[in-house]
Amino acid sequence: MKELYKSSEKSQSRQQLYADAYLAKATKENNSLEKARGWYLLALLSSGQKAIIYLDSTIYYSRSLNDAKYPAYAFSRKAYELMYQFKYKEATDNFLMAENAAKKNNNDFYYKVKYSIAVLRSEQLGEINEALKLYRECFDYYKEKDVRDPKYSYAYQDVLFGLADAYKALKQLDSATYYNKLGYEESKLTEDYEYNALFILNEGANLVERKRYNAAIDSISKALPKVVFYKNSENMLASYYYLGKAYYGLGKKDKAVENFIKVDSIYSKRGKITPGFTSGYLLMISYFKKKNDKERQLRYLTRYMSIDSVLQSNYKELSKKLQNEYDTPNLVLEKENLIQDLKNDKTISYWKMGILFCLLMITTSFGYYQYRTKKRQYSQFQKLVSQPINSEKEIKKEVKTIKPETENIGINEELVKQILEKLSHFETTKGYLISNITVQSVSDNFKTNSKYISKVVNTYKEKSFTQYVNDLRIEHAVKSIKEDHKLRKYTIQALSIEFGFNNAESFSTAFYKKAGIKPAYYIKQLEKNSKV
Image (cartoon, rainbow, N blue to C red; front, side, top):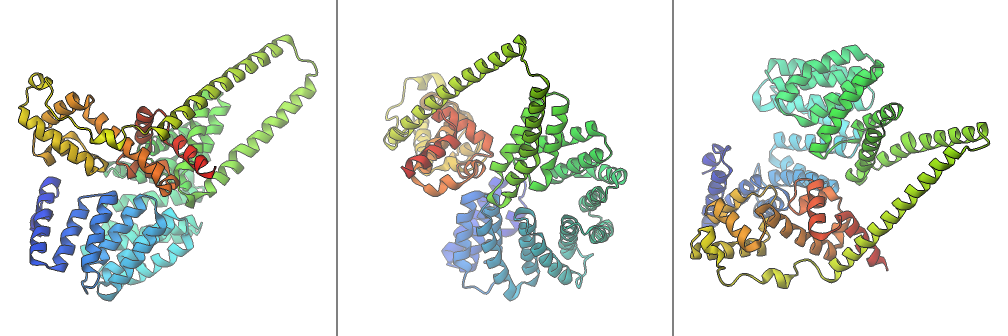
């Protein structure tokens, strides 16, 4: 069954079948190690909190075993799931437990975990020096192995890339070049074309730091097609960022901005960016200000400011950077220009007074609009708190008899009843919190036709399947955020994952559509009320 599971990578439904059967057999035989493996196989098919629950079961059944894989694999996988939720401290703790478990009898995995901790500290926590020490420990281990063997080649090149990247971040550029060249040669010998491109890209970034802009553009341009081919969005973002920096260094600001706009486009799709790649926004804001393109100036200023709220508390330096690099210098400059203008023109002409009057009217109108908006939002918030949308009593109220519409939708009454019962169970067990859920995946689970589910939901829930799932998620979110104070500390991105959405934007849109206010406003008011 394990081999069948591995060979069915292209069919998650088949893998689910084999994983369930594996766990059932292990449970029947009461074999702790195999039960641990069964839960781990299920975790590999899941994500988020569901995966963590499965991994905790793996840890439970293997915690007292002296196995080479478990519970080390489970701790490591759990750490990654926590990292995706931006819970970096908990992720670090689990990586350390994985490291400790692997240290006893699995040296190879021990150093893989050590590498993972280094990446977390370097890329997520900004602890470059601490990460560098871990990378060097891994390097010392792998250099004694046959690094051309597929068993070690990828891990070894991972470490070489980590070393080069860390030295680049620390501005130790000669060391960065050394490991980039070493990685380039190794990836060439092992025919790892993706990593070969990444080492070329990384050296291109290094050349930007050396201010060798033309050489940097040449290197990055060679690497970029392969990065795109392998759909490596993180390094596509890095490629466009460093191309932008190189063109800016050459004074070709138009070309620089073209690339920074591509960075923003990738960030908008991924919803993730590290502080090192944000300075392009400052250059775009300045560029469009000089072009007097206020619309785009405002767009990228707003995007740049929003990044501070999206990134976790680990990146508080970004808000400080925003204040130092944009707000304060520009506000001071504008103030000085205004004072100088007033000195030059002691009398204000009628047309200027007219403009000022118009601005005053616009400001007043905007202020009144803001007042009305805030009043409406607060009124909606009060309704939400006093009378939550679709209370528990209402949710439990189900259709007891089949509507006459059954004849129109062309589905057998008994089948409609079965689907309604399964939908009720789906709501009770919160199946809607699984991310990327589709009507097809639900129909597979219900063992029925997806068209039948769509028709039943359209008729009896009086909404589309997508709206039905999103409404359930938002109803659960409203109640959970109100009752669980910890959830109010989450970012909107983290909350979107918690409640089954793929990104913060889709969560906010669904929340506003159902609740009438944005989730950020709802949390803010709940926090205010709790302090009264």
